Length: 342
Image (cartoon, rainbow, N blue to C red; front, side, top):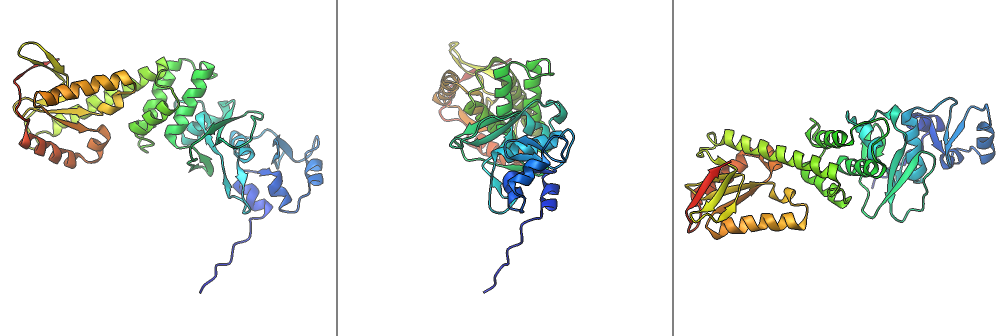
């Protein structure tokens, strides 16, 4: 049987280096620095300063933006027995987006507050520029420059909620343009920071899809993603050995009865494709409308294939095989439909 010897806790100098010179009172005491010495060091003109309750900066002068964020995280987090084992708090909102490198949000020096997400049962109050936001869900943390940050989708939702509650973010004109830019950046950057379904889920959870600027930006994003997917399928149809589909036709029966407007339709086979239909249904009325169109298509014999733009981009060959199979099977007892391209 082998035994692993636990590594000793880092020295004060090492811990200060890791945390950019920001230290908690508990971390200092565990290294033999009594409260009396902490108070003496933080006197006017002393080498240290108090940034937040029980959080100190081991230097004089103005703290950097990164040091302010470290102070916010250390103030809100529970520190375990081993230094560095902090849990129970993550940076979220605009501060997290700035750390992620979002070009649409103010840079770190321009931030006037830091939002920290903690479990609902934590007893913490706002302090200084730190704003506490609570959640009943389990915290997820992503390390960004050594700091625990909320996942991108959650940070975006918290930033939008903060901005919609307070009007427009300080120093950033054009709230609608900012919302659109942030949503686009969240899903379109090369790092693939989050998917549209993840983002939509967080916006619904935050009760933001009813806010006019958020809904307009979200609809624009979903429309562009769907149109891009339709265009991609049209380009790949020949590679997949498929006939060219109709894009967005209005389908009616011979008597004029309206049926639906699928994203793609193969009239000879009686196969329709709906792309990200569930993402466009963020209200009960929209869900009922989408279900109604799908039921009418199936009632007249059309085979309906549900696809996601994300899966199409990630697994194009699998999607092509699925569509080939659907076209081979075709519709069932298909009623003749008139298709009008829009």
